[in-house]
Amino acid sequence: MSTERSTAIPIDCHMHSTLSPDGHDAPEVMAKRAFELGIKHFTLTDHIENEKLDSWNYAEAMEKSREVYLALKAEYDGRMNVYFGAELGQPLYNLPQAEEILQKYDYDLVLGSQHRTKSYARVDRLPDSEAVRYAYLDEYFEELLALAKWGKFCVLSHLTFPLRFISGDVGGHEVDIGRYSAIIDEILDTIIKSDIALEVNSSGIRKGLHVPMPSAEYIKRYRDRGGRMISVGSDAHRVEDVGADIPQCLDMLKDIGFNEICVFSRRDPVFIKI
Image (cartoon, rainbow, N blue to C red; front, side, top):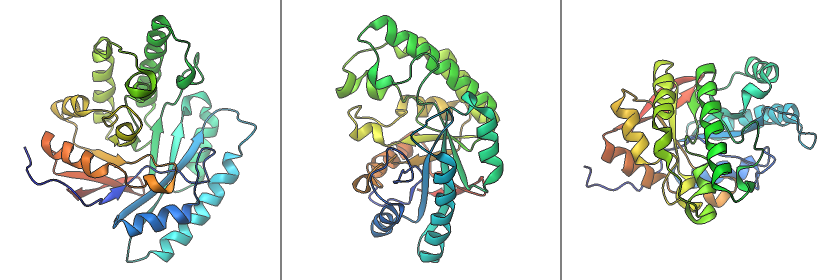
């Protein structure tokens, strides 16, 4: 176990700006904060939710995202590595759109995410019923496995995402996550075989779950099954959360036995010592 605690924030590979429908600060402001924090590897990953949303033009937002990336890359050249990223949510719900977006842009990093399920549009608005909670989790992990098997992305994001809303300070409900051990192991095996990294998402720490997503238990299982590719991100949606709780995540990873994490350049992993 490491006795030297982390203070530096070498990377943040999951952030959202006003180019996401739920972002609060401009990408330039997010980048400036990252530079002030000493972050060396900065990736904005604004949302592309692959379903019909009349209120948000994702094609227009991603075109702007590309322009912003090029400007930020030039501005911080030699001072901070800036990468072009996106978070691809529910790609299997609209594969033609997902494939078109992936072919149109030369992303450095694509996060694969499941924020909802076919039957439940909002995990934060589930009816207060144990049966519904387990029905949601059943569907979530089945859809996450299908996403992993599709595999046209770099990093599987926030594996235990539903727990942030079901458990902890927000939901307050205990669920037996152990009943999903077999399918979680299948998800981990699938991404390991496909050279897809597993994300440690620090937002669970500050959003009421008090542990990252996934927690140390699942990171250990990933490593025990041969997984070695870890990405780390704050999932910041506002400037004050850039880099938040990443040192704590790095300490957890070092305690588990990791001595490096990865960023992505042109969708290839680049390993960084921690």
